[in-house]
Amino acid sequence: MMRAIETKIKAGLQEKGIKCHTVFQMPDLEEPRVVIAFSSKENQRLTPSRVERALNSLGVGEFKAQDKFQRLSAAFLHLEVRLGARTERTIRTGAE
Image (cartoon, rainbow, N blue to C red; front, side, top):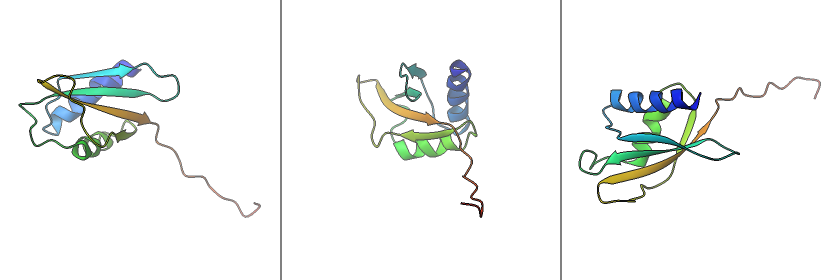
């Protein structure tokens, strides 16, 4: 299932005009996370909040991006994003 989400993220960002180089899942038992790599040269005006808004518009879940990019190399910007399931609001009854 995670492979399908990685593919959807990459294609969805591309549709929004955000060039994404790589999307890969981070091993984490408590909450699923991905790291997205962007080319430094092709995305000079990109912000983490723009990426988060684009991801949340895909309809595959709720995404929360870090506040800033990590630069692990000169060529790429990396952004860690947490994935959460969309949840239904709790319905309160008069019996409570």
